[in-house]
Image (tube, rainbow, N blue to C red; front, side, top):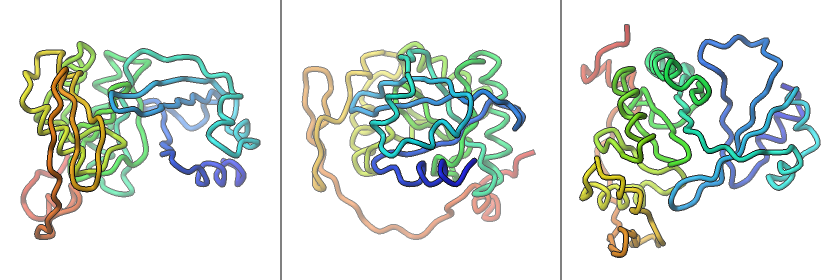
Length: 238
C-alpha cells in the first residue's frame, strides 16, 4: 500500500476503515473489492465497487470523493469476521475457523477483517446490512446465527450491539430488543430514534420506550481472550 493511500485512509473523519480479504486468500490477488456502508439507526446502506489497484484511491481526499469510483448497490448479507492476531491470538485462530465455516454457505459474503474491537468476545463478527455486532462465536454457532439474521431474526445471546452507537446506547437498544421474541422478525422494528448523554428513545414498532442511561465504574477485568485464558475463564484455541 502506497504512502498516499495509507495517508488517505487514516485521514478520513467520521469513517471507520476496515481492511478485508477472502478467507484463506493470498496476498497477490490483483482484484480489490471496496464496500462502503452508511450506517443509520436501522442498519446500513451498502455499496460495492471493484478496483484494479489501491492506488486508485490516491486522488481522493474526502468520503464524498468515493462516489467517483462507481459504486453499485449491494443487498446481499455480508459477514466480516475479525482475524487480527496482533491484538489477540484468539481472533486469528477462532476467527479464521468461523470464516471458513461461513464461506462454505456465503462464499461471496464472507470476509476476514482487521480489528473490530471487543476481542475478549472472539470470535467477533460485524453483520451488514443490519449493522449488528456479534461475539463468542464458534463455526457451528456462527452459521446458525447468520442464517437467522438472513431470515430477519436475531440471536440475542451473542448480540454485542449495533455498530455506530455508544456503548450505553447499544445497551439501551439491547434492553428493549431483549423483550422481543428472537424468532420474530419484528425485532427489526426496534431501533434507537434519538439519544442524549442521559437517555435514549428506542422505537419499538409504534411504541417509544425511554431508557435512562447511567455509567458506573466497575472492577477492571480481562480485556482480551488471552487474558481470559490466563485467568482460567476460557479455553485456549486449538
